[in-house]
Image 1 (tube, rainbow, N blue to C red):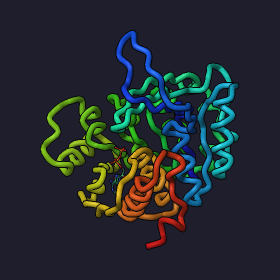
Image 2: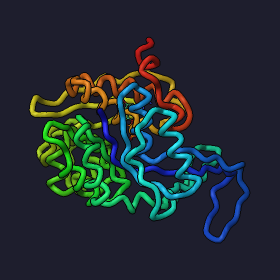
Image 3: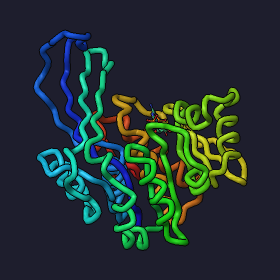
Image 4: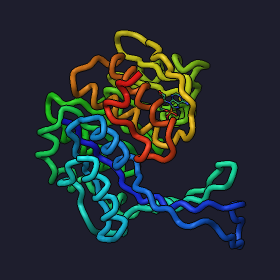
Amino acid sequence: DLLVVGSANADLVIGVERRPGAGETVLGSDLAVHPGGKGANQAVAAARLGARTALLARVGDDAHGRLLLQSQREAGVDTVGVLVGGAPTGVALITVDPSGDNSIVVSPGANGRLTPEDVSAAGCLFQSSRVVSAQLEIPLETVVEAVRSLAPESRFVLNPSPPRPLPQEVLAACDPLIVNEHEAKVILGGSAVGDTPEDWARILLAKGPKSVVVTLGAEGALVASAEGVARVPAVTVDAVDTTGAGDSFTAALACRLGAGASLAEAAAYAARVGAATVTKEGAQASFPTAAEVAAP
Ligand code: ADP
């Protein structure tokens, strides 16, 4: 079973002709409200692939919180670990112009109130999970507590997004640490990272994780562990919207690892899930089912 520890946000999206500058008001399209946040996205992606999945997160006692709970339940996610109250549900206020460029303001809200105590209180979810997956849209000390709560045989998967330097205790638990180029650079503290993704992966691995995955967008990904560094073949598709690809990639990888696949096998499957995700608009709306990934 997979446990996702992370964020749940309502994405509030307005299309505009031009994004407003300081002191300026512009008129936009009708408001679209979508369930999002990296934790919620990963949980939905995993459940849609058929994995037994639970989400440990916090939402507000408000309409956005109810929307998020509903989208999790519709996907088949166990929401016993979704805590309610303490602050408004996290929101991302997104304006997007005709060229697709956006401006985003995030209010973490209840995500910022998911505490280490909330993690401790969810001990039974950790006991029943072979894989625990986290991101960084919740307080870092909460992620640290998640690492400390792992059952002896369980595996910890981290996508450090938004990236920040990580304590050694967290780095050492990652199996794998999953980063894109930007995240790799921040985790490496802006130090020289070498020229190639293989270099980044090796330097990251030397920092303590048991394994590392570097995602490379349309170029696919690569995996690095004590056994060496290997490319994961890219999957060629017509990309429509890359939103959510990193989330579904991570979720798919965690699912396959939980099912006993090797890191290379799991990453190859995740690359197919990520590729399927970019062929459709939106985040959660674009995540494929297992049958869709299996189809040629
Ligand atoms: P992030 O969104 O975190 O930056 P990426 O853009 O690297 O992550 O996407 C995650 C994974 O999704 C990639 O490693 C790749 O397997 C897949 N993917 C992303 N964009 C494409 C694309 N245009 N074509 C095919 N696969 C893609």
